[in-house]
Length: 501
Image (cartoon, rainbow, N blue to C red; front, side):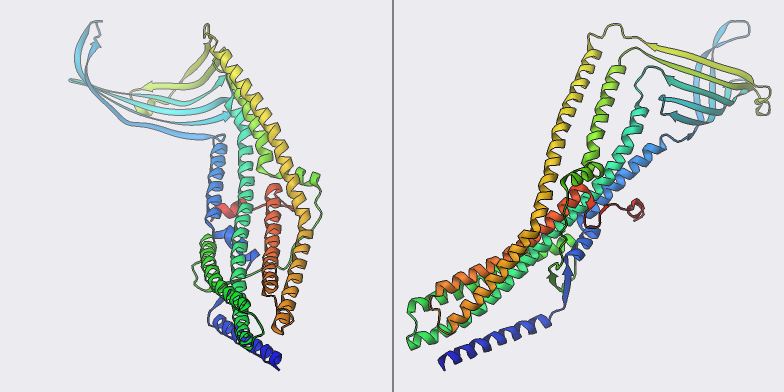
């Protein structure tokens, strides 16, 4: 009969506790949130996601500006007016000179169309302009117009460094690298969000464990007091259970404080302002598939910013070597233009019977003595090229090794999760059996009950820790390769969706 009373007392206490918890939960509005929803919100509104968008936009407009530099450029230049008043020496009609006070007003306007030639590094132009000169003397005023209806020409460096040619190769690579960097940053946001999700989930679970242990130890302590009065247990065992209850009470407070702290970080990262109670829903489905290391490495080289950055850095180093070899050496620039021009005192006559205007010039730069400066620049550029080449070779090896480790770690996750789930089930069953046996008096050692409870708690936390490791490794593999192996496709995004926001 005493055993029956004990079982009934425990059952009543348990159901009363469940009822109280249920009433408390029903009194609050709850918001259930899954891992996928957490990641979606983080990639849309988290501070990291917004920073990623702004960085990509900057790279986008930098590339747009670069491309615009190769389009025809139309420019209007005007001076309205250029006014001067001075005393100058004026040549008279008889050849003599005298100082006279005069005022000049110059007006000019010209429009030009220029186009860069990336292949040669030169520039062609088309130009048209009109000028007016008003000359005010003390006793006379003269007006004169100068027209240039059309002028066509070009400037062409012959032996100089052609920055256009190199930029035309490097800048598209930079932009493509920026797109890949954005995708990798978004995958990093997914990793960070996953960390916050499981940190809060673990805090949620630990608080639940603390509340459950508090309820269990309160029940066991009340039962033990009755047993102690009947002389069925020693005082030492009663004191141990009281100590366990006190520890459980403290654990509840600590777990609740930690939960509130982690909850604040979670809401802050997702920029959630609602005061509703959050309940995290652990992911029920995991993706397990075989990944070949060679395939992962090949996707990483093809898709990621690091794989593209290796090639870009080598190209930049080659550009620096080419610039060092050409700048400060023998150089020449050719300029040629052909146009029409005319001058008249009336604007109606300034475009009549225009005259030819031709200009041709060839400029030469020949260094005679530079005390080895050019040679030193070449040697430094070549040394930098060799250094970068060596560094990239090592970085490629480290990059491939990192992918190999991530693939191996992901391959282990299926078995690790299976072991953790089994351990959780076994530990829970052991604790339930030990607790029931203690309740009916078949287990008198309270330390055995303590050990069963500790193992049960650790096994449960171990399972969710293994689940967290799986998802972190899953998203790290996506970030490292920019390939979704679960869907067997590359990870991409629409550029316009970011620019038009």
